[in-house]
Amino acid sequence: MRILIADQFEQSGRDALASLGCEVRFEPKLKDDTLVAAVGQFQPDVLVVRSTKVPEAVLAAGALKLVVRAGAGYNTIDVAAASRRGIYVSNCPGKNSIAVAELAFGHLLSLDRLIPDNVASLREGKWNKSGFSKARGVFGRTLGLIGVGQIGREMVARAQAFGMEVVAWSRSLDVEKAEALGVTRKATPVEVAAAADIVSVHVALNSDTRGLVGAGFFAAMRPGAVFINTARAEIVDQDALAAAIREKGIRAGLDVFAKEPAGGAGDFADEIVQLPGVYGTHHIGASTEQAQEAIAAETVRIIRTFKESGHVPNVVNLARSTPATCALVVRHLDRPGVLAGVLDAISGAKINVQEMENIVFEGAEAAVARINLERAPDDSLLAGIRGASEYILEISVIPL
Image 1 (cartoon, rainbow, N blue to C red):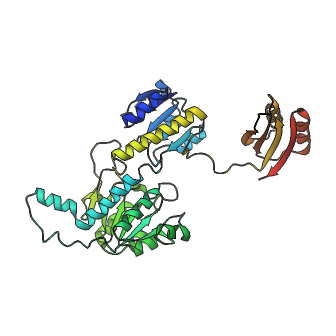
Image 2: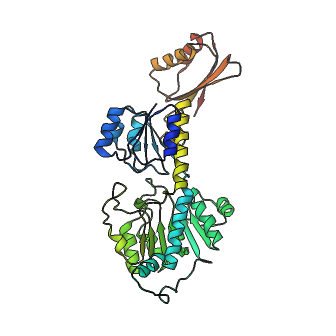
Image 3: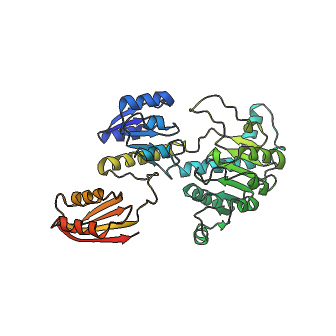
């Protein structure tokens, strides 16, 4: 199996992939046309990326079978194009949760105690103890979470350790889950904004969350409140955030920006960092040694499983549902050609197969095939399938 790693990736992961017998090419600076050319020349089975964009041109350049995003999201990959081409897309959710939560909490404490401003003042040779001695403190204050997935849950634990109250919204958060986490559930993100002294965003970027945090959200926030985003820039209407900073004194800790350079280094010209009360970091939420080692290990697990079984852990682009209307269930003796004959009959009737599985019983004498079909076979087709082989024991149709 050939693997192209087109981004920074831990040496431990590269060594582990090589130990699987894979041919590994590590070219972390590939992007755009050079990535297309490399895929065309090397013809990898698997492409591993972090922040490198994978448009359809890359997917079309070779014979890729799997793209692994060595991180939690996958918004830099053209998932729709991969799906059209039958290319699996997988990621490593949760492996950077602690790292992101640590950075988000670092922003929270920095904004409360003005730590970066303290440092800047000292480096300028100025002592201003009286000016920097007016922090409110975080004990007893309310943290609002937008999203309580793995990162959000890490935030809950840290907030509770600091003696904070936590209110939260998530599409999957119900009353029972909220009680188990020790948080107060809110019905909408706006309700979280209205109830919190500090809001931190921890949802994945998708069609439902793009622009989720907008003008209405910031209008509901308390004057002088703190807003933290270590998720994705596209979740937040940055113009609305900038207006809230100017007009309501909102303070912001941002690890993601609307105008980020494409690579790991470059010029940065996003105006929002020039606003008073904004602290920024360089999209480094997942960038701890612990997180990167965990992500590398998970990437290796995904590729090993795919290589050895054909299955892909954490795959993100399989259909949640298909056009299948019924399941054709065939109980049969486990003999060569039985299912081939069944599929030939289905094909002859112009019925499309959506999904299928064949489960073999102990001893490998008998099996049951379940074939999900786009439309139900008629009685004559069923009779033809039953009579086509002496090894077919029973056949039935289950509406879906």
